Length: 115
Image 1 (tube, rainbow, N blue to C red):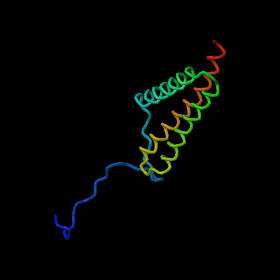
Image 2: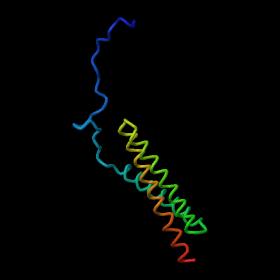
Image 3: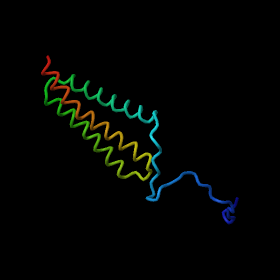
Image 4: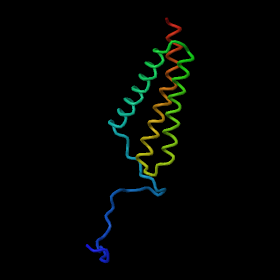
């Protein structure tokens, strides 16, 4: 096809979109729910591991600040991205980093209490 020729076909709808320009949420399936539970489990496990490896509460707060910084980076990137599905997944990662940031000092404090 040359640059001067025009395509005379019809556009094909590839996705359905809601009225606000965002993709409609599909009904939650069991796989999606288990994926979210697994993500929360992994983020709590990472936070607990980081908290129990800390020697002082100050070190736990530093690790928590690092996790919060990573969540902030994810939130900033999600604000720039135009693709809805990618923005949603990056926002989910930000939430997982916040969960890790919360569980790190809590597990460190509990480790000191029960040691």
